[in-house]
Image (cartoon, rainbow, N blue to C red; front, side):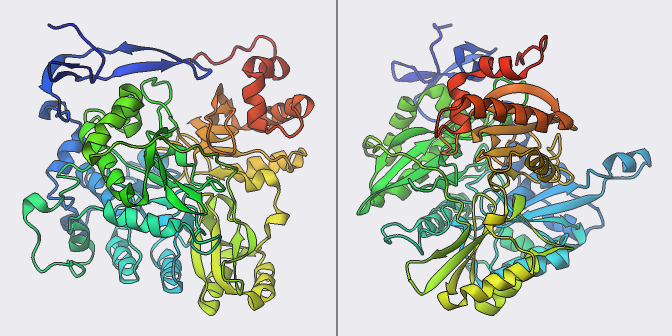
Amino acid sequence: MPQMEPPGRSVAGYKYVFVRHFERLCYSDGRKTAKSPRRFSVIMSPRRSVRVSEEKKSKVEAIKEKSDYLRGNISETLKGDDSHFTEEDYQLLKFHGIYQQDDRDVRQQLKKEGKERKYMFMVRTKNPGGGELSPQQWEALCEAGEKYANGTLRITTRQTIQFHGIGKDNLKNAMRYLNENFVPTNGACGDVNRNTMAGPVSDITGSGAFNAQELAREISENLSFKTTAYYDVWMDGEMMTKDEPPPSNEIEPMYGKAYLPRKFKIGIAEEHDNSVDVHTNDIGVVPVINGELKGFNILVGGGLGSHHRQKRTFPRLADPLGFVSEDKVHDTLKAILEFQRDNGDRTDRKHARMKYVVEEWGIDKVRSEIEKRVGFKFEPVTEFTLRQPENHLGWHTQSDPELMYVGIFVENGRIKDTSGNRTKTCIREIVKEYGAGVRLTALQNIILSGIPKNKKDEISARLESAGVKTEDEYSKIRLNSMACPALPTCGLALAEAERYMPDLISELEKMGYGDENIKIRMSGCPNSCSRPPTSEIGLIGASPGKYNIYLGGNFEGTRMNTLYEEMVSESELAPKIAEFIDFYRENGKDGEAFGDFCARVGFDEIRKSTRPEGVEPPTS
């Protein structure tokens, strides 16, 4: 056997391809060890894209390849009496914007009674850049939620809407209704480019030098899959754009039969607004504006999902790839996606995101390979500084001085009516009566845009009468909090998030910490949909009622936090957070943010002040 070299090193026009990737371990403080090889075999192959042998591919890869371009047996199951889909079709449903779930509040009781799970479905829309959604689209979303789902609308951290609790009998009706009202869901999930994120108001504010919404829509269109399966299944083929299907070898000229190894995410930030957490995406796009749009800084290799105690998986911030001019941005993004298609790990879905390719190859090699695909050299990234995210709450004047938009805080993104608050009904009425547009933010809030200036007081009064509070009526710590849905709908949740986070915040408010400008995010599992790894305090579910605490991220989204303590019970969270804040109040510098303070003083000092004697720090 020839002497082994790191992945990608060439010998006489060939390169070594390791079937198993190298593993980079991390200390608890974030420092990385040297790379250590796992068990692997070595083969010689030409310097082309890695091809994984059929027997080593993951089960999902085989499902995709045999699916007839995402059709599977979905249509047949919809017509049958089964309450749910097979594992094979469940994987394909994701590409259509659907997750098969069950009510986990009753799962164990049903199991004891010998009954099957209470299956239901989550449907996610695709909404590039957060909108703008028209009054017709918003009315359709509200109607669909009431008619087919659980009556609520859930704004996601990627600026889309989720419906929860849809039964199988209503699934096709719901999907058809949404599409008839121009609310698509295809590509909102699955191993494709998902919803492209962007700051939600660049097209109606500022100088007009850059329109993030337009770019997000263009990216979404350019990187969408081409199979007609979505319309065949849900619309009986009515929305097919061609009389004849394209030849089989051209159905997916970009994605191919197996699509991508894993999900793929793109975010567009601006220096004054990184609410999308651009560094956490597979591709980050940052416009360079100096009076006019000069081009784009491109970042690659971000992603936050991981698995507890599995060192081979980890969250990662994107690296700078290069600067490209406006006319080259779409070719560049397509080349990056195709690079991931050909080089992502198809043997292990836990290790399949692009961040692992960038981590193991190194950004220089990745850059070189992508430059070969686009046919030009990238210019160095232009220096840029991301400021704290804009929350877009309250009233703001648009570029047209006669129009305004209003941002409304929606705690954890759940739009609903309660006994003392008619947020859902009030927003629905305002959109319908005033013709307002609707935009969704990456912080799970909602914006009503295009409102005549002379209607501001009238609409403010209507919101107040419906119990919809202004941002001034919420504490800072609540405004800066986010949580994912978690239980009872998410099949991956290890602990509560959305249902528990408001109570945790209320407890901190009662203890006198409401005015602290600290970013706290909670997720029910380490997939980190609410992006806790970049927060100042990250709370990630580890088991029922227990969370791992992470400290030291920042508001700008440019630094990840680090594991501080594992398996902390719900009852301990508020007291521990209070101790952190007290220590910060006593020792922080003037103007120093909480996350910056934690990163500066280090965990040893924090533990000296807050940890009882004899309690050891986490070892993982």
